[in-house]
Image 1 (cartoon, rainbow, N blue to C red):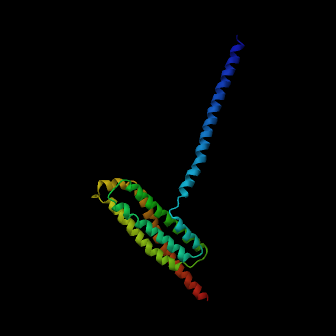
Image 2 (spheres, rainbow, N blue to C red; image 1 turned 90 degrees about the horizontal axis):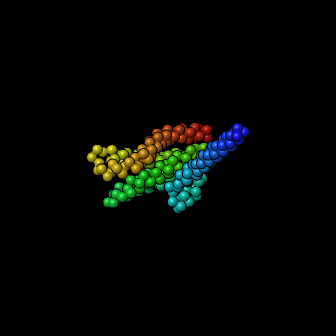
Image 3 (cartoon, rainbow, N blue to C red; image 1 turned 180 degrees about the vertical axis):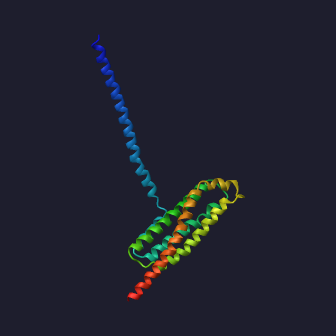
Length: 205
């Protein structure tokens, strides 16, 4: 009997070890699955395209034309901000907060695309003086519209429904306003730099 008990103890220890190893393997598999899904989810977020098929086609066709391409992006951004008036004026407030969020998000994505394209054309040593004048005018318009919207939802006299809805888009509104403010500052500096480069090119001739 004394020889049987150690054998049983060894068997039980082996079973417990196997169970522990099995649980550890299962836990590891769950973690690996979660991590493998995360890039997919992020990829789906990045793949969100705020442009319509027709707008995307116009952008592709103007890949080598900074004046045309940057103007298109400015126009598309203006259109997204103009569309904010629709939910704001709607009598039915159902889903208005989410709709405002989505349209502001589209604007922010297009504005980011505008910034990326400015950088791309700068890397190509393009003369951006003409489109920058257009962009700066748009920046001031964007800043004014976003500032007005922030003032509306910050007004203590605002309706309770307006305040409740604003919670759904206040974060993206702040991000968009900050991006435009930074863009306005950067674009002013860039225009000065572009004007100076143009003078240097002229003197070399």
